[in-house]
Length: 109
Length: 115
Image (cartoon, rainbow over the protein chains, first blue to last red):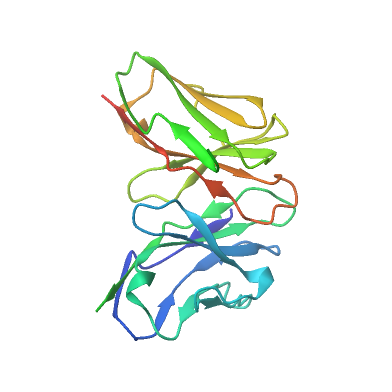
């Protein structure tokens, strides 16, 4: 079965520290992977997708098929990065976006 | 109004009531989704509609009945719910369901409490 696991419910770091939000998936095919973010009092929105190999707001994520991971990283966290982060996958040839349980990132001043 | 709009934002109902949640999108999208977000659980996909046709029913109990009269509107009809159905129900839309770019546009959700 397809599954996305985010092992940390809460990650607390100080401003300027590096951040890594962990995401592991279980799927035997070639998934497409995404990170979604929900800032306080805002809607859930797409942050980045692995296929684009983009850096958004300083965040990057690399797909590691060997480790079935798609960790989200940022070298220097900012207070405005505090939010809920959800990892998600779409199994190939599918349209079902499957979410992990989310990690709350708290960046302290 | 632009984006995805959900009404009502909050709903309290008894187990014998019948109510409906409404979702409207003004983005010109062709696919619409219902997700359920319970405390301490991942977002659960419930239903997917693509060009008004239901393409996914993720083993949802029949007390939840979706309706998609056109590509801009999606309803979730609720009947004889259980307290464990209390959750945040999120509607989303995307350009189209097939070959999805993975970008879903979400509403703010309808917070449902079943007494």
